[in-house]
Length: 266
Length: 121
Image (cartoon, rainbow over the protein chains, first blue to last red):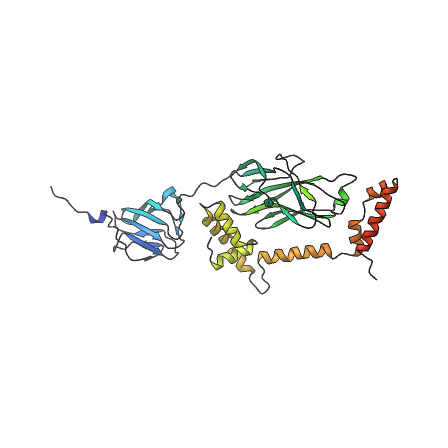
């Protein structure tokens, strides 16, 4: 029996010279493993049929999916440095990605966008003497939060992080105690990474009568433009008195508890 | 997260602390943090370039100026406003009309406030 050596179908594992990125990438024949330098996007490859080869990318560039450059998930892929992709040329100048080893350990197939993002968290217990003298209190000042729901897993320890870019409705209610008539000035905000929303400015002397030393404010609501990864927190600062003001919580979305929530609108 | 100088400058154009933003994203969404960062940088790159000029301010510089202005607005008020903020409420004054002890306490508080914020000569 005779054996025909088909060298074009074999991968030698030899590292070839670096190849500068180009819209049509020419796969050299001095090896089967190449570093791709530069950041020019790749839309096609020039390669003989039957070759198997591995490309390691030295930087960020985009491979454009198409019939002659078939990528996992049939979608474009943006590399980062040290990503590796394996290919086979199923015909001359027609390649399919058959494997990957990405720096982040993930997949080149982009996860479907999270379209359902909702959260509601209630302060679990009273936070005593947190403001009154101008000290700022934010929802991120404590980890004592009871999550009623957190679809999209964006809420953690008083901070909401947007999993997706979009418009979010955010609401913040405060129930505060320990107030005296000297607490005559107060500012409330909903902070987001892109901008801060001033939602209230009250003089408690105008609000409180008699023996009332506690009051609920809000819920205040805004619609915020957030990019994926942006954060949001609620903020309160009271002035002109002593640091005797409490943020009160009981773990429920009641008028007698601080709570913070939101949802992705679109 | 490692950022280039341009990436950091663009993030600082949009958020108060670009490095902290990137680090938070890396911790919260490690599997897609790089893509999130690149997307935000790409989205605001032109805005950053358009804003460059002699009086350019980062987001942090803008916020610092805003908070300073707010503080000045709050503190740079007349003695009358400062007194008004700390005087007993109308409710307390009404109650004091019918209670001698309360009235004495109210008068002391009013005197203390006047002493704290004296009328300019």
